[in-house]
Length: 130
Image (cartoon, rainbow, N blue to C red; front, side):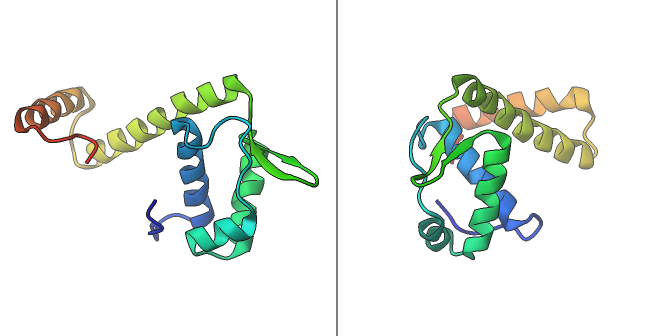
Protein backbone atom coordinates (compact mmCIF):
# COMPACT_ATOMS: atom_id res chain seq x y z
CA UNK A 1 0.00 0.00 0.00
CA UNK A 2 1.37 3.38 -0.94
CA UNK A 3 1.84 5.85 1.89
CA UNK A 4 1.65 8.83 -0.41
CA UNK A 5 -1.02 11.14 0.88
CA UNK A 6 -3.05 13.70 -1.05
CA UNK A 7 -2.43 17.24 0.19
CA UNK A 8 -6.06 18.17 -0.50
CA UNK A 9 -7.54 16.04 2.28
CA UNK A 10 -6.63 15.44 5.93
CA UNK A 11 -4.28 12.48 6.42
CA UNK A 12 -6.48 10.94 9.11
CA UNK A 13 -9.39 10.82 6.63
CA UNK A 14 -7.21 9.17 4.00
CA UNK A 15 -6.17 6.54 6.54
CA UNK A 16 -9.83 5.95 7.38
CA UNK A 17 -10.55 5.46 3.67
CA UNK A 18 -7.67 3.00 3.30
CA UNK A 19 -8.82 0.97 6.28
CA UNK A 20 -12.42 0.96 5.03
CA UNK A 21 -11.23 -0.23 1.62
CA UNK A 22 -9.25 -3.03 3.29
CA UNK A 23 -12.36 -4.07 5.23
CA UNK A 24 -14.55 -3.98 2.10
CA UNK A 25 -12.02 -6.03 0.12
CA UNK A 26 -11.77 -8.61 2.89
CA UNK A 27 -8.09 -7.84 3.51
CA UNK A 28 -9.15 -7.11 7.09
CA UNK A 29 -11.58 -9.87 8.01
CA UNK A 30 -14.61 -9.48 10.27
CA UNK A 31 -13.50 -9.89 13.88
CA UNK A 32 -9.81 -9.54 12.99
CA UNK A 33 -7.59 -7.72 15.45
CA UNK A 34 -6.30 -4.38 14.14
CA UNK A 35 -2.60 -3.55 14.45
CA UNK A 36 -1.62 -1.31 17.34
CA UNK A 37 -1.50 2.46 17.00
CA UNK A 38 2.31 2.42 17.11
CA UNK A 39 2.61 -0.25 14.44
CA UNK A 40 0.16 1.57 12.18
CA UNK A 41 1.93 4.89 12.75
CA UNK A 42 5.21 3.33 11.60
CA UNK A 43 3.50 1.65 8.64
CA UNK A 44 1.86 4.85 7.42
CA UNK A 45 4.74 7.08 8.46
CA UNK A 46 2.53 9.40 10.51
CA UNK A 47 2.19 10.60 14.08
CA UNK A 48 0.48 8.10 16.42
CA UNK A 49 -2.10 10.79 17.26
CA UNK A 50 -3.18 10.77 13.60
CA UNK A 51 -3.73 7.01 13.75
CA UNK A 52 -5.55 7.33 17.07
CA UNK A 53 -7.90 9.89 15.53
CA UNK A 54 -8.56 7.65 12.51
CA UNK A 55 -9.28 4.61 14.64
CA UNK A 56 -11.53 6.56 17.01
CA UNK A 57 -13.56 7.80 14.02
CA UNK A 58 -13.82 4.25 12.67
CA UNK A 59 -15.14 3.13 16.05
CA UNK A 60 -17.73 5.94 16.02
CA UNK A 61 -18.76 4.83 12.52
CA UNK A 62 -19.19 1.23 13.74
CA UNK A 63 -16.47 -0.38 11.62
CA UNK A 64 -14.15 -1.11 14.54
CA UNK A 65 -14.83 -2.09 18.12
CA UNK A 66 -12.50 -1.66 21.06
CA UNK A 67 -11.95 -4.18 23.81
CA UNK A 68 -10.49 -2.52 26.85
CA UNK A 69 -7.41 -4.63 27.37
CA UNK A 70 -6.93 -6.40 24.07
CA UNK A 71 -7.13 -3.72 21.38
CA UNK A 72 -9.39 -2.98 18.44
CA UNK A 73 -11.17 -5.38 16.13
CA UNK A 74 -12.95 -5.15 12.80
CA UNK A 75 -16.70 -5.35 13.24
CA UNK A 76 -18.25 -8.77 12.83
CA UNK A 77 -21.57 -7.21 11.79
CA UNK A 78 -22.24 -8.51 8.26
CA UNK A 79 -24.84 -5.80 7.57
CA UNK A 80 -22.35 -3.05 8.39
CA UNK A 81 -19.75 -4.56 6.07
CA UNK A 82 -22.33 -5.09 3.30
CA UNK A 83 -23.39 -1.45 3.58
CA UNK A 84 -19.74 -0.41 3.33
CA UNK A 85 -19.35 -2.42 0.12
CA UNK A 86 -22.20 -0.35 -1.34
CA UNK A 87 -21.01 2.96 0.09
CA UNK A 88 -17.50 2.83 -1.39
CA UNK A 89 -18.59 2.41 -5.03
CA UNK A 90 -21.22 5.11 -4.55
CA UNK A 91 -18.53 7.48 -3.30
CA UNK A 92 -16.17 6.65 -6.17
CA UNK A 93 -18.93 7.08 -8.74
CA UNK A 94 -20.08 10.32 -7.13
CA UNK A 95 -16.56 11.75 -7.26
CA UNK A 96 -16.18 10.61 -10.88
CA UNK A 97 -19.49 12.15 -11.96
CA UNK A 98 -18.60 15.42 -10.22
CA UNK A 99 -15.25 15.49 -12.05
CA UNK A 100 -16.92 14.82 -15.40
CA UNK A 101 -19.49 17.56 -14.83
CA UNK A 102 -16.64 19.85 -13.78
CA UNK A 103 -15.08 19.18 -17.18
CA UNK A 104 -18.28 20.34 -18.83
CA UNK A 105 -19.61 16.91 -19.74
CA UNK A 106 -23.39 16.64 -19.42
CA UNK A 107 -24.77 13.91 -17.15
CA UNK A 108 -26.46 12.01 -20.02
CA UNK A 109 -23.10 11.80 -21.85
CA UNK A 110 -21.19 10.22 -18.96
CA UNK A 111 -22.36 6.60 -19.50
CA UNK A 112 -21.32 6.89 -23.17
CA UNK A 113 -17.79 7.93 -22.12
CA UNK A 114 -17.58 5.05 -19.65
CA UNK A 115 -18.78 2.53 -22.25
CA UNK A 116 -16.28 3.83 -24.83
CA UNK A 117 -13.46 3.62 -22.32
CA UNK A 118 -14.27 0.03 -21.34
CA UNK A 119 -14.54 -1.03 -24.98
CA UNK A 120 -11.22 0.66 -25.83
CA UNK A 121 -9.44 -0.93 -22.88
CA UNK A 122 -10.89 -4.36 -23.66
CA UNK A 123 -9.82 -4.01 -27.30
CA UNK A 124 -6.28 -3.00 -26.32
CA UNK A 125 -6.07 -5.90 -23.87
CA UNK A 126 -5.24 -3.59 -20.98
CA UNK A 127 -6.21 -4.40 -17.45
CA UNK A 128 -8.71 -1.78 -16.27
CA UNK A 129 -7.46 -2.02 -12.69
CA UNK A 130 -4.02 -0.74 -13.69
